[in-house]
Amino acid sequence: MLGRLTERRGQPVVMAGNVSGEGLAAGDTVVLGLRDDALVSASLLIYLLPLGLMLLASLSAHLLLDAADGLVAVAGICGLLAGFGWVARRSGQPGWADRYRPVVLRRANGETSGFCEAERSGT
Image 1 (cartoon, rainbow, N blue to C red):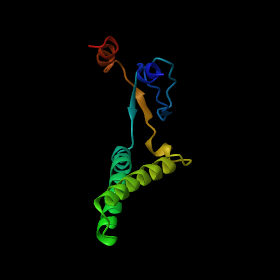
Image 2 (cartoon, rainbow, N blue to C red):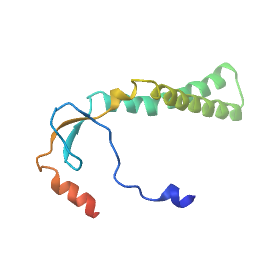
Image 3 (cartoon, one colour):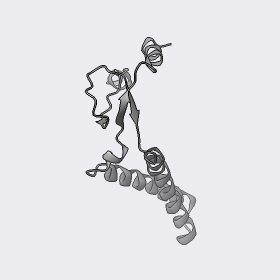
Image 4 (spheres, rainbow, N blue to C red):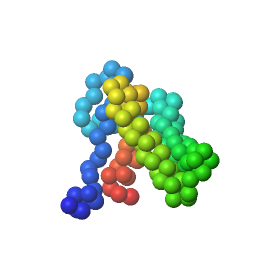
């Protein structure tokens, strides 16, 4: 069981839209693009929202309820889990992943071939 969890997987599979309209074949080297705001908004959503809810829940428990330290910690953990749950539920909605899906911009024309070969050989 532990072996399955730690084994090295093959190359990652990325499902990308082909906006260039070129006929591409398996194994072609391509340049991928991502919307300008996609990386920033995804980072804010995945990292800052759960942390913000954790802080809000723990501060609420401390300031409004005057709870003991243990309860403040539990409230913070509950806020963090609620944030992660909200992100997981929201990211599973139809159309949500399309905002963060990469698109094929063009064929690479060999400008990245040296980098890709170095990555495959492990150097």
